[in-house]
Image 1 (cartoon, rainbow, N blue to C red):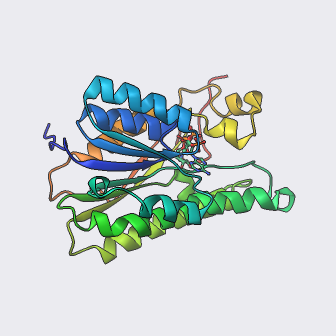
Image 2: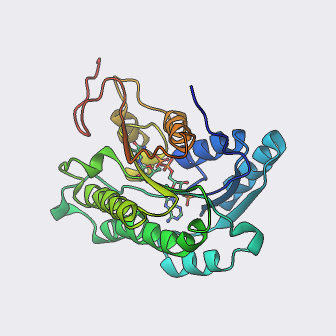
Length: 259
Ligand code: NAP
């Protein structure tokens, strides 16, 4: 199978302290990609940096950023040193769902936080980093949307809306960048067993475990594997969108559970 050599490129990954972002950092480092990793939990990023630099001899820069605060994103990214401005790949991954209550019962603060991180944070980082990516000969923006972008469900009014926003934003960017060497891919994972459900249910492990009960969910590494595939196609091949489900999952809400 063809695999483009992406070693020496620079990727920025938001939300790299856990789950899909962390797995993607490992996979890209194993391909010789230098990394800028951002999240709030700087201790986790520090450990990841140390292990990736040692194991793969790549350069890793870590930045503590709260993606719910657009001003913090602007300040942090505008103060990147020149040597880190040659960004080729942007992976917009930081995101979350909070709660699964119907909207009339939902906490407004939860709704606003999802919109801040999943939408405002993502477009802010993209706006600041896009001028750098436009200087690359192999630019690539990867947005982590969700199967929730395609299908509304009860309890997901805001989460589904934010992921639909992410998908439309990516699709519009692809049109705007049609004459530039920049690809745009929307990745839409189904059920992935990460900290996602623990965060959604605010630490309630019972509720979080139920999400994956009776089936074999995807792992963060499965999504990272597909991101690696998307990034290593021939230069003229652009994968616009990829939906990845667990074997026993058919839609965002329909899954067969052996229980
Ligand atoms: P996860 O294990 O909870 O990881 C989420 C990452 O986002 C963490 O690194 C977290 O870092 C970061 N993040 C959250 N809020 C942030 C904030 N305010 N500022 C900075 N970083 C923040 O979840 P995951 O499953 O890997 O999720 C990654 C992406 O995949 C999300 O966009 C999610 O919506 C999407 N997705 C997940 C699934 C799934 O089933 N798991 C399915 C479809 C799509 P800190 O906490 O250290 O800040």
